[in-house]
Amino acid sequence: MRSAIRQRSPAELAAGYTRAHRVLETTAIVLFAALLALLAVRTAGALWQARWTFLLALVAAMIVADLLSGLVHWGADTWGTVETPLLGGSLIRSFREHHVDPKSITHHDFIEANGNSCLVLLPAVGLALVLPISTAAPWGLFAATFLGILCFFLAATNEIHKRAHQDAPPSLFRALQWMHVILPATIHDIHHQSPFARYYCITTGWLNAPLTAIGFFATLETLIARVTGAIPRHDDIGHEAALELATSLGIVSPAAPAASRPLRPSE
Ligand SMILES: [Zn+2]
Ligand SMILES: [Zn+2]
Image (cartoon, rainbow, N blue to C red):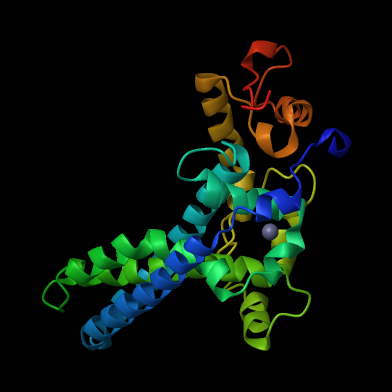
């Protein structure tokens, strides 16, 4: 299977990171941190009197963050190309680069690792700030707390993913990995092993086993492949390997028509 895999060069994929984008990422991180700090200050008093609300929001937000991280990661791994409008140059490029050279993520500094996440999460933190926050409005307090914690964990997801690839992460990250508060390296390693089509969740990693057990992503791929005719992972690992893998997983039928092959612009 792996011998048929055709991937782009790491240099080509890494070259998509421009100076202008770095300025945008830096600005987004500063703004995101400021808005999240403001939300923490605004909710702290009410949450002190409603500690169960905080605990419930914390657990719910960590589960939903893991699910969303899995959906975004799966989407970027499986569909589209680095030329896809809007998402190709940033999201898809970074995941394709990561598959070619999994250790390269450990060389990304704080801004490159976390800037894009903070940028896309800015509207969500803004929404949390306009919700009613008081013990007199319990659902508003819960929603604001849930959104704030969700944004925090989603923004931290790339940092967590990076630490799962480090040979010797700092002791704080090692302790959190050991307690399964954040994605442990041993769990994430499964994603980088053949057939490279499972364990997409990279925040807490809690949902990897249950989603694999119920065939969650394989079912989504089957539905999308049937509706669109696209072959999952076509651009990431090459047409032959993608077709072989999708067939072996039962996502496309063995007699999938050659016409269903999506053409790359250069072909
Ligand atoms: Zn991946
Ligand atoms: Zn990884």
